[in-house]
Image (tube, rainbow, N blue to C red; front, top):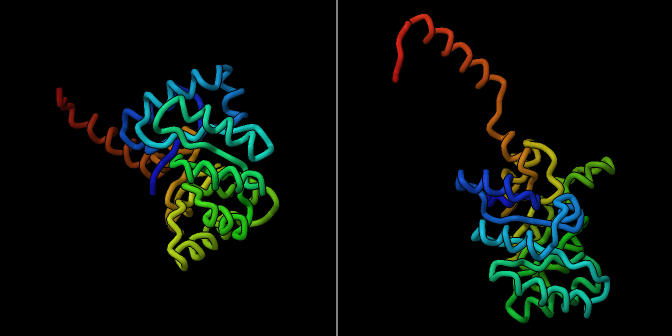
Length: 217
């Protein structure tokens, strides 16, 4: 499963990139607002840091506007993925932009039917929102499983990009189900390395090592 980082924080992206685990980045209007920077400026900086797809989101509500904004965003770098919402207008924009050879991430997906339409429209990525479904007392992972089965049934090449991830359990479950990509905040990705038994074991090893009176360096 590929790891995308869901942030516009340059320092956080750089930190994770140095470990070699960043396959791409996703941004949205909320993350751009949080960064406090110009969308083109910060997106260009992200694209310079990451070789993989960098999602930049359109804000128009009509297909013509999304296409125009998408073309403008695509000028930032070759690895830009244009992000459009899963609306009828968004599907129209996806079809047009994909036809021009651009990567398209169809976002705000909440049903398998929506995901099927996105694949038919040629989406590069489909972004089902796990956490927001969980907020409604629905199991967001059920949606990932349904999309996986549908895409496998018909050989769709659209990649399932599990989004709205809020926990390390979400990451594990997405990987078990077979999501192609998971996009998560930097803190969630870092937390995947943490386990109370690891900490406890390390504490015990260090106490025993101290008793030997030895040094390695």
